[in-house]
Amino acid sequence: MDDSKRMVDTYEVKHAIHVGDKEILFLVDEKITSRPYIVCNCSWDNPLGVDQYSNAMGSADYLEMMTEFTERLRKQLEAVKAERNKITVPLQPFTLKHCIPSDYKENIENKVVIIRAECLRPEYRTTDKQLVLAIGGFGAHGNSRGRAVYTVNLYSGKESRWNREDILGTLKPEYMPDWAKERLKQIQDERQARHKNLEQER
Image (cartoon, rainbow, N blue to C red; front, top):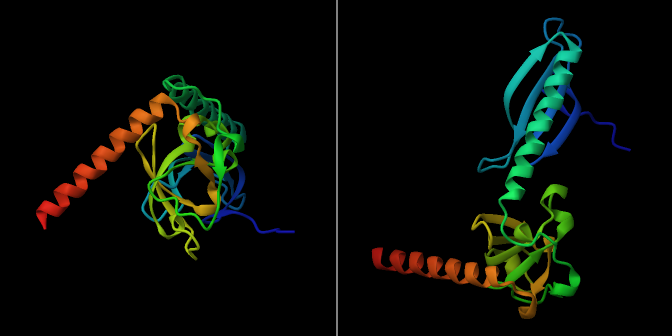
């Protein structure tokens, strides 16, 4: 059993809830009488993916800080709801029946693959977060010792890194939605244009 405590400086993390793009932390250090309770945000939106703390607020009043903690959670939930309401495609997640199961002997580069729902945060287990184009990484090649697979999300266009085991499989052509076909062509055209420009600059 792991009895290690999560610490932020001298403060112990007593409560931590991750919703959307932030984790909300409730910290306690009762040796500091002036402000034994702190609420702060934690995110990982940086090149190294390390914990980045922000918007810290401290007090000696437990109820005040717990109210701040729950209020921040409420705002995060509202932000995720607003984000979801803007999604214009069906949200029903893809499952094993929609794909050719992942085969580590297979090269998946330049193929549309499905991210396992369980590898996504619960609030993001939707179609728009699952469909990605594999664009590189050692893990995209068959029989590779590498795990990294670099992808472009078909809905958002955001580039991300996944591990090969995070990929459920290659999307079966008959299950490719019309919106995904359009976005795939756009992404491929944009990548081809960028590659052509780089070649011309050399």
